[in-house]
Image: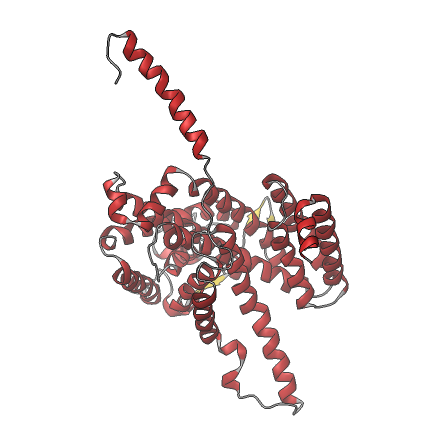
Amino acid sequence: MNKMKTALKQSRFTQAAVLALFVIITALGVYLMNRSVVAFLLLLSSLLLLYYTSFPIRIKWAIAAVLLLVVIPFATSGGSSHESYMEVATQCGIYIAMALGLNIVVGFAGLLDLGFVAFFAVGAYTYAIFSTPQATNIFKAGWLPLSGSYFWLFIFLGGFMAALFGILLGLPVLRVKGDYLAIVTLGFGEIIRIIFNNLDKPVNITNGAMGIASIKPPDLFGYQFTFPHQFYFIVLAILAIVLFGVKRVEHSRMGRSWKAIRDNEIAAQAMGIPLIRTKLTAFAVGASFSGMMGAVFAAKQTFVDPTSFTYLESVTILVMVILGGMGSVPGVILGASVITILNLQVLTEITSWLNQLTQQGVIQIPNALSPSKMQRFIFGAVLILMTIFRPNGLIAAKNRRVNIGEIKAHRSADAIPLQEAKVHSGGTVK
């Protein structure tokens, strides 16, 4: 067995053959079966299998693009469950982007945020207000409400508004640390939800607890996006932008500053890192990703209300980050996918199966013990088990490898001209 594993790791051709065979079998299973949750999960797991191959990083990205843009949409189009499959995939993309945003705050900067869903709500309400007659209660303008063609602008505007709220949150609270910061962010999340719940008087801005309905769907040159398989490609495009931004900033000067603050705040400050500005940047960048997906969520659902942005949603996103691995981009993607699929498909399917057995008289399970109603218990169990057995997450964070010899050689090469310059200028080199 060990020889087979070694041979598989060393042979890229064998890896490609195994991956191709796995994708073909699972894709055919999804395409030919009317509704097979197992086959769909196996098809999605091909992306995880791709991650563990030894292909060059560019080849991995190219194969992942083919799987996401071609294979998965085609495989799920074979039966009547096409839209339900695409709904799960779209929700996965939305939560992955939000989890990556929270990972910047919690995983990179080490700032525990329990009210992250508030930024999601800001992005959602930003588009919802201006694409419905609610906007006319604020601005008396004939060009309101805006059409669905402005949705593409509001993706970035929602991100900007969420980033602005992230900065406003950070200014008064970033002087506190640890548990106190968690309590303050929790309060901020609840304050935002309560404000949206009561902002129907004296001026009706959010329509209060009734929510905002009839939100215009996205429109591109007269083509409307109304179905999950259409939003799937919108979410993929935004997710690509988010992933590119996260990977670029992770190893940048700002990313290293976040990690320095996370590891030792006093040492980071002694090294000249501005704490407040660096923390505010983490809040703003993380919040912007959530705000962008908030606008997509509002357009997809065509309805938003305060009950969509509860504390449980913030906990769900935090569980995704902890499960995958704080500070690990691939880990967070895996954690968000696992939790989303668990909520939308696995628990739902298990509940339906148990209900059928109950109706047939095979077993008798109280309604209160239904798996779909035990979400918080399952999340708590996941956190406890991960803390005990996998404290670093499913895929632990890895720092970029640095060749110390090359750095020393580079510094020596830079130091030689400096010494020669001192000698020529009459100085003495010690």
